[in-house]
Length: 202
Image 1 (cartoon, rainbow, N blue to C red):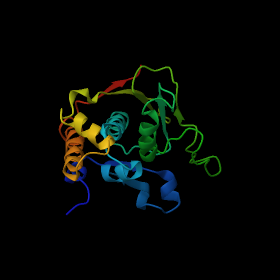
Image 2 (tube, helix red, strand yellow):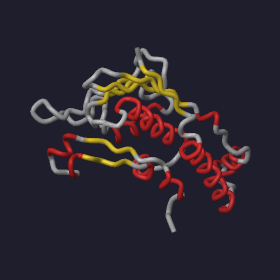
Image 3 (cartoon, rainbow, N blue to C red):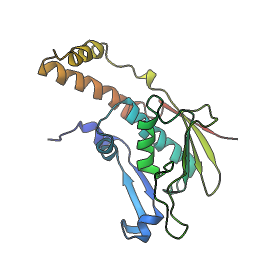
Image 4 (cartoon, rainbow, N blue to C red):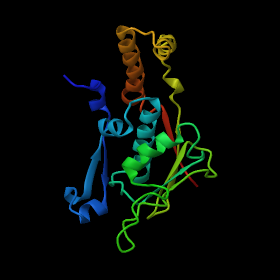
């Protein structure tokens, strides 16, 4: 029996090539596979925001690289929001895990190569949720995420209120969690190609 929802295993994985990992002998041929379970562990929870960040990255990398393996450390990421606005920071952390891109806190590189810092920017002049750019080719895609097409159960709000007030029973807490993850499952397993739209820049 899994200690997490079974649908986590059904979410498509993202495979990348990391030249630094190859050089340092971390992963064979530098190939790194990311799955939703790993991202949830890093985030500490599964929600429409974490799911959306994963879905946006999944679609953006497919649009940028096609059949090629996305190259970690060679992808620039831009947000129109400030890092402290709303859930921008949560989304950024998920994208950082997969692409390696960071603002100023990332790896500084070895001999001028493999740097991961200065690849993520906030307050960018864009209209999309996030913009991804291949450093090697300059190709960019704007990504739009809309989870409103997958509404939550009407039972969620009153259950959430009882939980926050500290009066929910164990059964009600369990029901809330189940309903919450059912929405995430629909986003990632049923509507993955509908909640995210990708547009080539230029």
